[in-house]
Image (cartoon, rainbow, N blue to C red; front, top):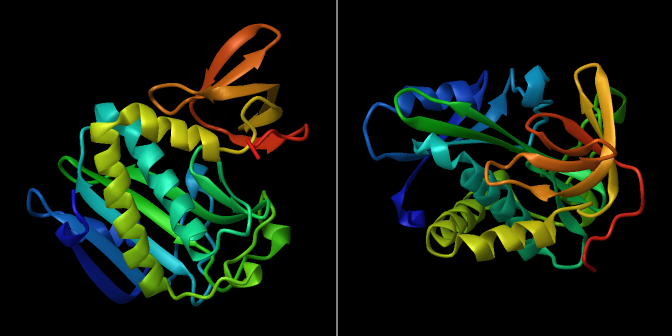
Length: 243
């Protein structure tokens, strides 16, 4: 995968970029990056609504991918997003919040939604708060924007920079998987610390010990180690971020 492989499509208005990009998955071997200026019905993980505020990034990537290696894709997508933000300014604290959110100064600045596309295509929906963050009364975790952290960019510029990073880390996972996974671990918030995992109507507490080969969270509890595939995590104790 190379940056030059991507076909970047910009639309003025869509309901959801994840839905819209499916219309372009009609030929094998295409790498499609669809960005919308306006998104009217964005969605996040677990059926939540993604608040699509004007000026922010609404982007979906679509390409053919072996679903058996989905864990690698989660690593590449979140690690490259983390690095893209770091490249703008190394001073703010940028961390990955499992499974694939990015925290900027301990507040959520972006999120992702992976979905199955037509045929063998996988779709990665990416939302980044470029200039605005949503009303905190309507979200589960504190939010921020790049602008609030003193980072100036546009959705179009950020897209190009992200695609370069994403292409790099996908290739890195093919050539040096261990190094890429270690980079993800080094940039993940809370590994080795006590967390709470919210799943539907139940909560679990334990030590966040890392992730497995499928990207599932490993939670060490009094009853042993559990693998968490889906959930929202909250940090209970002061975390060790390796800094």
